Length: 499
Image (cartoon, rainbow, N blue to C red; front, side):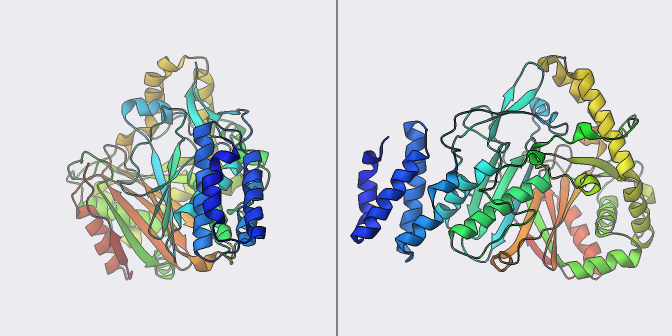
């Protein structure tokens, strides 16, 4: 396509405008043309994005000068013109995920931000077109090599979609045109669903906040940049692309990961993993005070509540209840990587010994301190690196069954559920008035019936439980325990999803 093929659309945009504005529009699309080296279909698609955004701006009274300034094609950089491909090895945490998919597993997580105003889809699309160049590993597709999977960058166009389906349905990664994340909007909400091979919760939050910052800029709202809101026009920093796992300073490996199976919650597993989503919205001050009262952190307190609820919702009277807890390794060394950099441990308790909160919280806090320490996490990273080195020359088709055995610690039978705490989300002061709240959810992996997350913004904390069974006893028990302990909960929940 050349600009003349877009003359009808450009003429429509210029309709009723004065000569000066008309010339500015023509110059804008000429500049856009210079920034694109794609096939005809993709080029047309990208031009459509800008035409749709122009329509919105003009309909809402923006001057052509302001529109041209906001959507300056320079924000595309050379992303849609540079056909060079880059290749990235998967990080040590991600390396097992594509192999596990052979068994029907696709670890997905979802991050959402709810704004005070309805989302403008055409402007969100331009924000994504501008943002993606800042995250080269996110613009990649997964490829299969002789020994390992890897990431290959592509400048294919990713589309913003209206949310109409069950959250976190598996993503097709077979075709070159598919990436390992997707962006949705629904009313006031922007959601991004990530295949865990790309990043962890920290990296996912930075991408979401950077997209949000660019979206607000394009609406001419105040915005700013911070550690977790990147400038999309800034050069990519090498430290953002690092696989940090091989850098462990541990002098010995951990030896083994937790290998004892866990009891599972009652309830018939549904055909779909996302049967229902429940949000418990609470004041941070209240849950901090409760945790402090028992001598623990918020994570220790919520883990103890989940263990108590598990005790009531598991028929077996003997056996361990293990709840997996991710540990963000960046807190130990200040890493800026946008790739996976988390390890895990299990908060564990014999079901018959799960007692009252005043006894349970201090014990779980002690487990967090010991099992989640840098020394133990580094040793586990050393074990992971040793396994990868041992298997590096094994063909990928042979790794699939081997990795299932070696990475038995990842097997879902050894945990009853998971609690992932992303902590407090902070954005620049200029952006904060436009944000209502954030949400974070994980897909339960069979045979787990539930998984839980924590995320905080301003003075509110949201505990989200995602269910893989229609049995409501677990979430009801969690609600009862929190309410009886003085929490003022605003409860939100989805209808039951059907396959």
